[in-house]
Length: 58
Image (cartoon, rainbow, N blue to C red):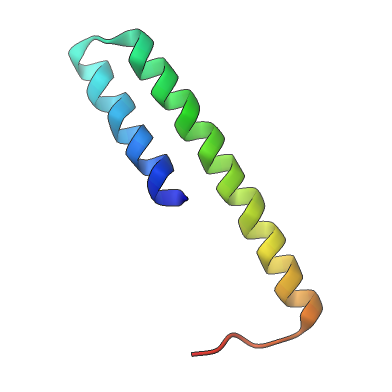
């Protein structure tokens, strides 16, 4: 999911360089939403693993 956020961020940067402000704004908004979803899922995963008390497998 983090890769999708980075992809949309790159699209937003490229679109901004070429002057497509509408596309750049939309891509930046999508990247921000996906990034925050990623952060929320990461926190939930960390809390769930801490509650279960299992150590990560290697």
